[in-house]
Length: 104
Picture 1 (cartoon, rainbow, N blue to C red):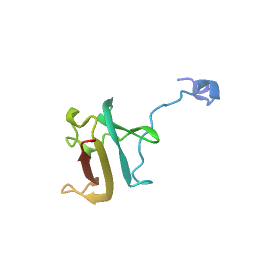
Picture 2 (tube, rainbow, N blue to C red):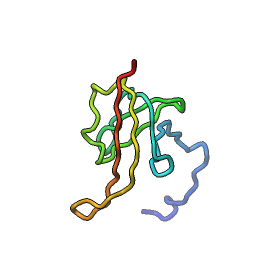
Picture 3 (cartoon, rainbow, N blue to C red):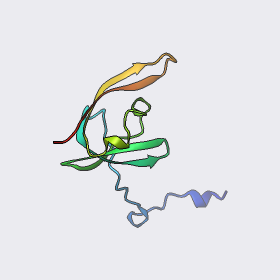
Picture 4 (tube, rainbow, N blue to C red):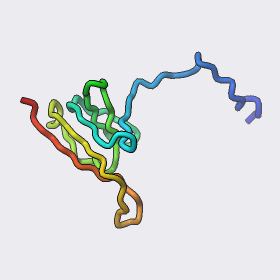
């Protein structure tokens, strides 16, 4: 490969805006919203919640896999990040409490 081809000559015109807003559980430990759908990611499916901030993608965390289903669409959801713990394999994983409630 020619060295000149890898020069960083990008400008704002080359930028692609990402409209996806993933929730950062390290900054804000709780997420509250209404489940509106699932979106496919490279790592599985991400629940998408809606609240006063708009649409928020939860992310495809291993600890959340299997915790949500199509039956949860339309329900009020609260996800609380409890921190990271070491699993049996010695790897760190994120731990959550999950609350679901029908909207009346």
